[in-house]
Image 1: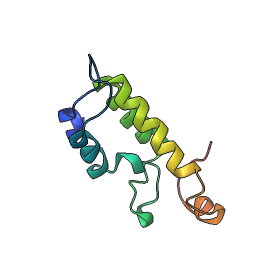
Image 2: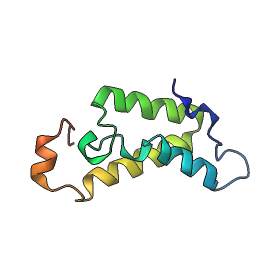
Image 3: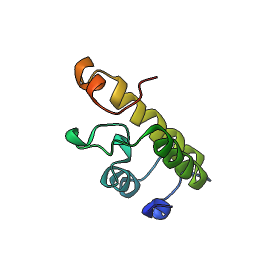
Image 4: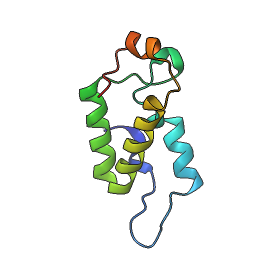
Amino acid sequence: MQHWHNLKTCNGHQKVFDAETLKAIAAAKLWNIWVPKTHGGLELGLTEGLRTLQQLASIDGSLGWTVTLCSGLIISSGIYNRKQQQNSSILMM
């Protein structure tokens, strides 16, 4: 498991992630797990990326869900043009 075990969760009465947790997610580049390294991302393969998301969800379901949605939106939102997507090792579903 990675160093993100120290992230605070949203369990209990807390409804949002605090600024410290959001900064830790950004510092670990978890928003960019599918983004090519040439664009500052982690460029994880499908299996490694899904395992990472599973690990996050095992810490806190809302953490896994949030990172899954946001990381997917970043790569599918048109930030990268189609040619860049085709040239990356990212599997587009």
